[in-house]
Image (cartoon, rainbow, N blue to C red; front, side, top):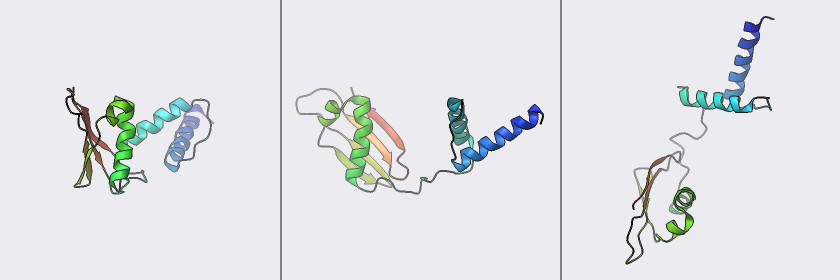
Length: 128
């Protein structure tokens, strides 16, 4: 088999493995990961099992837990916990949540907006 044919077969197998989600240990897994990411970002066909129609954040408790995991990593658990009680609203399939500053404390508080369908973070900020 010539090199071109071998290369073509390799890419066909890689494509089938990426879309069929059959992953085997390879010598260059980082390159495989890069190829999978590139494919996921450029494909026009929807391969995700969780898409924008699947509601993953169904109630206030789930939305808070999800948001806190993200906010704690970015801003620190202590800072975010000090901004309780949070305001949490569910409007048009989005969770909008923000914190409050304790009385007599200067600075800002967080704001996060998360799509309940798919869990995409629409906005995340923290005032100064």
